[in-house]
Image (cartoon, rainbow, N blue to C red; front, side):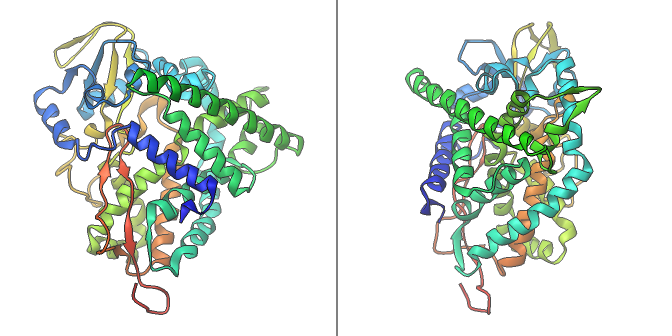
Length: 432
């Protein structure tokens, strides 16, 4: 079990705490979103506040005026117009723990410069290299549990494996205990916001402490890597060699860029993959179809990210007075963008509540769109493809455990399962 080591147990505990903060008691908000799409697609107020869940639209509870958008076309329009709808308010949220160096919160000029330096690290060539790197890691992790015949896949696989994968991609030392410590700190940053003022005071102190510790330890690794020659096809290696007409990144900037990827780097993959896996387990015929035809794996991953978007909301701020669907939004007001709702918009997706890998794929708004499209999207897809292929290779006749509670996908801002109890046929033909 993941709790066999203190460091791994810390990840599990912090994952549970993050889930609690972002609405773990909310089972299915999609009927509410569907009603909002029909009756008030532009809603005055932040629906996350109604759920009692922290929101990037008013991260510090400043009382900012907020409007929630539920329709695909509206969310897409906002994301593709960074001049009218800026993302700098994100620096009040996650950005405050990251020294103001949050990529999604940068203005146009700085954002273009940094994205240009990052581009080689996320090129098709780099991603192809990551696929080759991640396959043996996923195979080893799944093979390690294969003889058990039963597991809670969240605790035993879907939490520790993405952590190991993303830290391998980034180029951290191969030290499992230290990696788990980094991951646990990163998740403590996500717990910073709280609706209750006293809880917020304590959690924010913990979040800032974790952020500083991440910075200090990452800087040490970056300096060591530079002293060794800045080699390697991992993210740190790319960033140390990045150069734009003589403008390179110093150690502090490389550290800031790496640190900003850490808070959501693993846990969102855990949630996305967990929801997708539940969809397959609840559809055994589809699971076997994918097992037999691995060309469908990418379709499964894409549909899973649409069907249950791990991070259900994005945020922007109006820079001028605007009107959306007849609703006036004044300059300075924030927009809470319900990407999870947009990804189930009936006007864009036929039978949107169905998990259908054969549907025509559209832009998944859970990762944003336009100039601030999340660079981590391809990383997450690459990880999830490797994980699904490994599970299909090493866990024959995988199915839900009939003697355990059925899995539940929960959450408002962050959605995913807390546990997935499964059984499979052990190698050699023995039944689980």
